[in-house]
Length: 344
Image 1 (cartoon, rainbow, N blue to C red):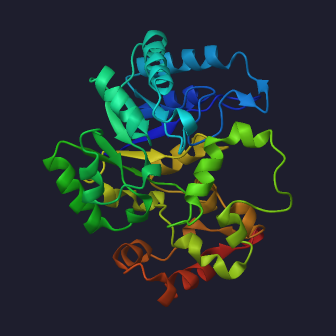
Image 2 (spheres, rainbow, N blue to C red):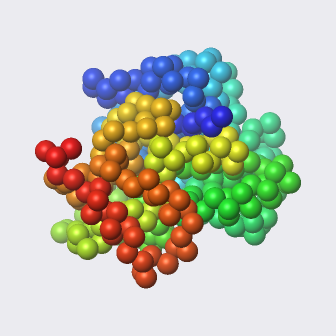
């Protein structure tokens, strides 16, 4: 049975604590992944917003991680920033990695997984913590057997490149190699990111240096994210259907390929809703609201009615040749699922 990896977030204001959501769905959750406080990662800092520090954040996070691990759920520490700047090969970075792992072991009782984009971090963990699984981040975009072979000495597991999510035959091929070589594979199910995004490296670097960028006078009146610029034109909206996300109703097709599926919830405003949909394998609502990032504002006031997808959706999109420029299927499906809120 597929279980889920969910992303930790510190509650703010009246938000429901993530640890309470995990406790409710504990039978369906295998792992909780998290970055450490103010360290660079693939998302924003947990405790620092332009110098405004949540000083109680560390104590709260340590308490939550200990509680989560006591439920029998694995902890997965992220060092998945796209760039570590001049410290990328440094003993400073290695020391920081080791110090953080040691501290989490002390306050939470242990750590099972480290997920990283950095071969240097992977090497450090392998050398100093051989009992911890080292997993390649989805941001490394490893989607071939060759790609896994090149770094097989550093990684025990791989997040499969998102763009292959709907190609079941190819995923089985990757899994056969992984099984033969003692590796495991994980899939990210609800990414809203555009397939083959030409702006991904630029965007990931922006996130890695977010604290510096926030305190810099930047270009005004320009959207740096390729996806949001692209989706300003409604003619491009069919591309949303051509991305890597998998509907909750279609997750059963991945049984036997992945034992753990990652759900993007670190920045999601409604993580309980996401977990409810994927654990129940059904969702009644705007499909875009399950994704991170979600493009609901780009299509507003219209929504993407998940109930309106045709029965053959998964069969068609998992068997197609990915030559989207010469096919209009997704454009036709978009006309079918795009709904005014009052009609939903």
